[in-house]
Amino acid sequence: MPQVKKEDIRLAILEASHALFLEKGYVDTTMVQIAKRAGISHANIYSYFTAKLQVFFCVYEKWFKARISALEAEVMTAHGAHARMRTLLSGLLVETPRLDNGFSHNLVQALATVSPGDPYDPSLLQWFRERLSAMLAASAPSLARDGVRRARLIDMLVLTFDGCLVNYHVNPASLPDVAMLEEYVAAFLSAEPAQSHESASMPQGEDPVTTSGSAAAA
Image (tube, rainbow, N blue to C red; front, side, top):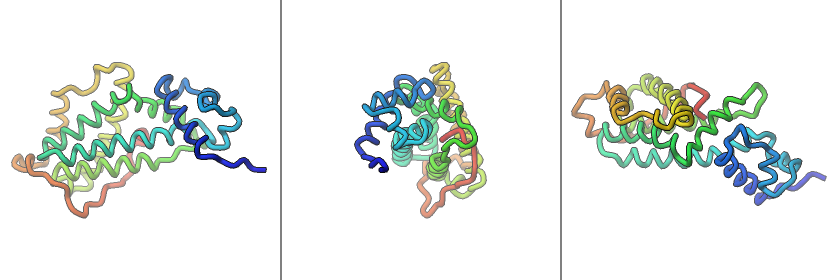
């Protein structure tokens, strides 16, 4: 007789996993430990999740989407191109790697273990790229109009974000400082007329760019 899955057990698994990933990191957390923390048998956990990678992405997706959605709200409330771009870059490259004691570094650990046949789903990366596209388009009229350049900048941001996650884990002081952030802002707004830096607004009806990029972000 097939086992009936219970939502409270699934939630217990996810809560236990989140706590263990925070405490020990992805690599040093095992399915046995997750099952024990959740109060179920090791065998039973596989009735709900096929692999640790699947458990991780269920935990991380909720955490990451909440973080990026909050950042997007901050970007949209900032006034002017410079303020919006700086809010985006600082929030993504400095604040997010630090959040919850560097929780996002678990993403790097998890992706480093992926091999052919593992249950990796790139949909979170695609969602991340779409949100970055919307924020970049809202920050600079030239980027709202130029989807090709916007896609290149998204690739750059995804790769830089990955690097910041690793750097924070190795050396927290290595994240971009104020001067470096200003260099990034200037580079990303290089195609903007100076007067537009204080008047960028969210373009109406803009479709996010969804071209392929680094799979290492999410």
